[in-house]
Image (cartoon, rainbow, N blue to C red; front, side):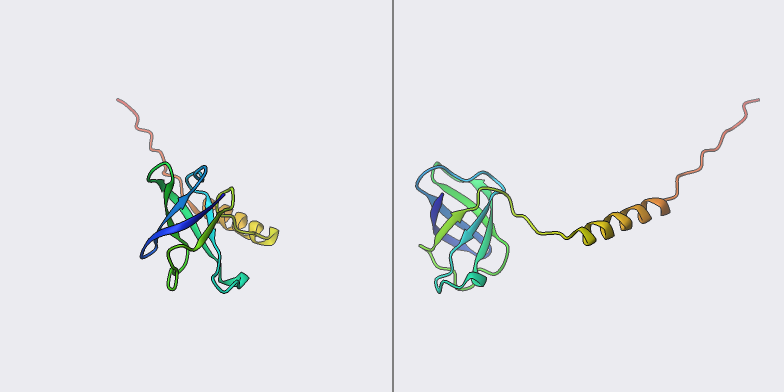
Length: 112
C-alpha cells in the first residue's frame, strides 16, 4: 500500500492512503526525494484517524520532510537484525541478573 504525507507536526506525521489502511504498529517507509537509499525515514503507525488517514511517529528527524512525499507500508512492524552472539550475551546477562536477586527469607514463628 502506498500513501502520501498530508501533515507534519514535529515527529508526528499524518499519512493518507487511497485503499486499505496499514495496521497499528506497522512500519512505513518514506521515500527520499533525492532517491538515496540511506536517507529513508521509518514511521510507526499509532492511530487510525479516519477511513483514509493514519497518524504515525517518526523514528528519526523529520527535518526536510515535505507534504506530498510518497509513503510505503512495509506490511509488518519495525524489525531489527540481531546476531546470535548478541542474543547469547543478552541471555547470559539476564541469567546473571536473575541469580543475583536475593529471595526474601521467610521467618517461621513458633506459636506458644
